[in-house]
Amino acid sequence: MQWLRDKVGTATYAELAIQFADYFGLFVTASSLKNKCRSLGIAGVHHPFTEEQDEWLREHCHEYANYVAVADAFNKRFGAEKTERGVQAHCAKFLKLISGRQAYKKGHQTWNNAPVGSESIHSNGYTYVKIKDTGIKTQDYIEKQRLIWEQHHGKKVPKGHVIVFLNSDKTDFSIENLYCISRKISTIMVTNGWFTDSREHTLTAIKWCELHFALKDVK
Image (cartoon, rainbow, N blue to C red; front, top):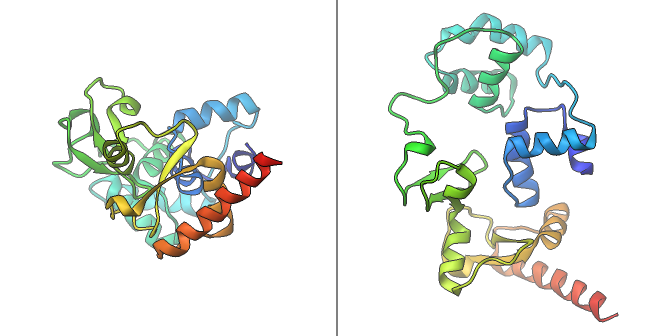
């Protein structure tokens, strides 16, 4: 909750969802974050773009074929990390720039039209696999590392736990690179910068956290 209080207003909710996933290792939707901020009374009107950035968008937005290109040019110009959806929403809702262009490139297949079994890489770098076709994104897709871990161990990931990559490589789905930890341990690991590109070093840090909490439980 403190993280939300510090971050709300600095980016769109879609971008905050990506940052949230990177920081806590937990995927939540932008709407869930927005609803939580509303319940905390901190979901006031925010404007995560500077006046200079707004002026640039007004002048150059229509020069590009789609919002993927707009966002790419914008990020290079300002050294930012805005998503195409974030830029598109800002242009439409705040700047009132009417455009027929789409955020996706021509030929791009949207998530709801993708067949079961297909994979997509989220903006946070995680790969998601479509396992159902209900039309509800949070039910239809699962993190690939979670799916592989559950299939290998023959059980569900415990509630309050996440699957992490020991070598920090989000494309390495070898079972020896996947490890299940609690969210509180994940928070400690992220806060202290203990996730490394070395499986041995990362696992050592995780084991230290596990021992720390085990000793506290004994006391």
